[in-house]
Picture 1 (tube, protein in one colour):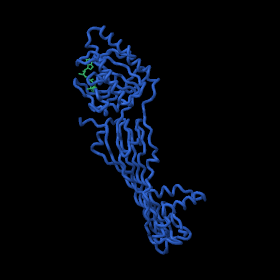
Picture 2 (spheres, protein in one colour):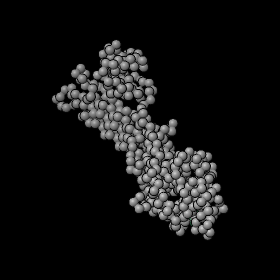
Picture 3 (tube, protein in one colour):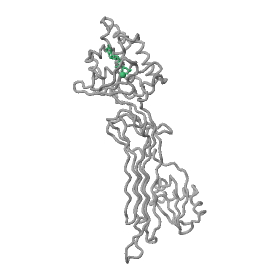
Picture 4 (cartoon, helix red, strand yellow):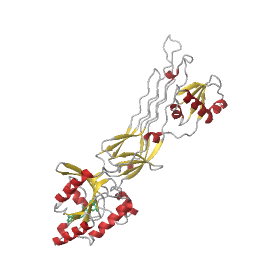
Length: 423
Ligand SMILES: Nc1nc2c(ncn2[C@@H]2O[C@H](COP(=O)(O)OP(=O)(O)OP(=O)(O)O)[C@@H](O)[C@H]2O)c(=O)[nH]1
Ligand SMILES: [Mg+2]
C-alpha cells in the first residue's frame, strides 16, 4: 500500500533576517564620514498553497525539509540587503497542517487556490546609520537579523467534497463516480482497488457538485482495520453521504447487514449526527426478480432512509438519485473546516531568558523574547515606561548589566531600541 499517502511529517523554517551593517562613509578629502551601514533584508516566509491539481501528499515522502531563503546582510553605502525569497509549499486542497508538538491546527487549506503564510521570515537588522544621535555620531554597532527556528508539522489530507460515496469494498463506488463524472478512477473486481479518494464534478441542470469516491470501509475501520482511520478521515468533510450497497449480494453479502456495519463504524469514528445519507442499491442489473428490489427498498425506507435502485454498470437509475441530491444540497451546511490557531500566538517566541554581550561600551541584551518585550512598551507613555523599568529589574536584567560592568553613560541595546544606562 505504498501508494497511499495522506499523512506526512515535514519540517519548515522561515529565512533568517539579514544583519545590519556597520560602516562609515569614505571619500577622498572627506574626513569622518557619517555612518552608512545598510539594513539586513527580511528573511523569506514559508507560504502554503492549496493546489487544485494535486491529489496526494506523496511528494512529501521524498522531500520533507522546507527552508525559505535568508535575508542578505546590509552593506556599506546604505545598501540594504535583499529580502529572502519566500518558499511556497504546494499541497492538495483539503490538507490540514498540524503543529507536531501538540496537534493544534495551524492551517486548513480547504479552499482551492488560496495561500497562507505558515512561518514569517525573521526581520532584518538595522544598519548603524539608524543609530546616529547628536551625541553619538559614530555608532559602531548594528542590529543582527532575527533568527528563525525550525518547526515540525504534520500534514493530513482530509478530502473536501459535497457528496461522499461510502460503503464496503467492491460494491461499485468507483464505477458510480466514473458513470456520473468525467473522472477515471481505477475499477476492478477486488477489494481496496481505491486507496486514495477520487473526486469528480457532477453536473445536474444548473447545479454542479463535487462527488468523492472514498476507499472501501470494513468492519473495525474505526479501530483502524483496513486502513480504517486513513479512509474515514475522508468522510469527515462531506455534506451528504451516498451509502452504496451491493443489492445483489454478489459476494454472498447481505446489503442490510453491510449497511448496519458501516454506519456503526461511522458512528464510532464520530459521525456528526444528522448528516443525511441516501442509500444506493447498486448492481441491480444482477437481480432478475424486480420484487426483490422493491422489498429491499422498502426495508431501507422503513428504517427512515431514501433508497435508490441503480446499476452503475448499465448507467441506469441515477436520475431520481441525482434529483434528490440536488434538492438536498442547498439546505445542508458547508463542509467542516477547522479553526486555525491564532497565527500570531503561534509565532510568539518563547521567553528563554537573556544573555548580555558587550561590544566596547554598548551592552546588547539578547534573547528570543527581547524584541517582543520591547515591542510591548510605549515609550511615550509614563505608565508603560514604569512597567518597562520594573520588568527590567524583575527579570534581573539591571543586575546582570551591572555585573558585566555597565555604568552611568553606557549604552544598552535591547531589540531595536537603545538606552543610556542610568544607575
Ligand atoms: N454487474 C455489475 N457490476 C458492477 C456494477 N458496479 C460495479 N460493478 C463491478 O464491481 C466491481 C467493483 O467495482 P468498483 O467500482 O471498483 O468498486 P469499489 O466500491 O470502488 O471498490 P473498492 O475501491 O475496492 O472499495 C468491478 O468489477 C465492477 O465492474 C454494477 O452496477 N453491476
Ligand atoms: Mg473503488
